[in-house]
Image (cartoon, rainbow, N blue to C red; front, side, top):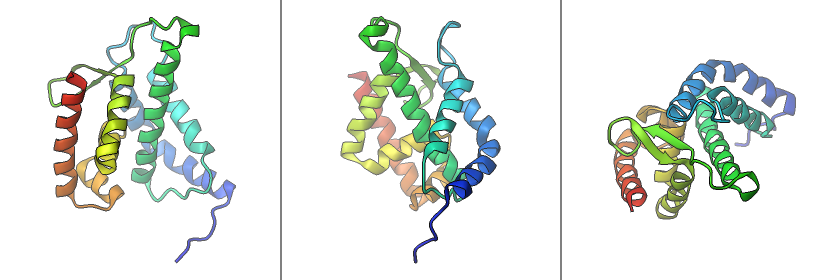
Length: 180
């Protein structure tokens, strides 16, 4: 059964209604990603969230089911903003030998500390998607989107046990890939 097409004004109103519900959570995630950056770092948590929100609002034909669905889409948008920003910082026209943007996380299973740089993680996630698209999506939802295991399972329509198993495998795979 097909849903009725979503008008642009309905879709924008839907996103505008849901974004405030998750804004502070997204900002907290962004602050966590950028925690170890220098004070003069050009990408601040608020800017990261705002850029992701702008990208979300530009999408067309989407009816956001609930805040969890919007968080899942926000995860991908923040991942893309971080990767695009890191690529731009490394571009020759902007002094390409600059400092890498790193992510602070427990992604690799260790204590919180300086994590992988954004571009290394992006390349590793793309490789992981070649092995298992679902596992790469789980990393994106859990790490970038901050979704819990139950929320991730609901978003992907799989069991929580599947998410937990794939999460363990993906973290181990990424750890090996990023340590090489």
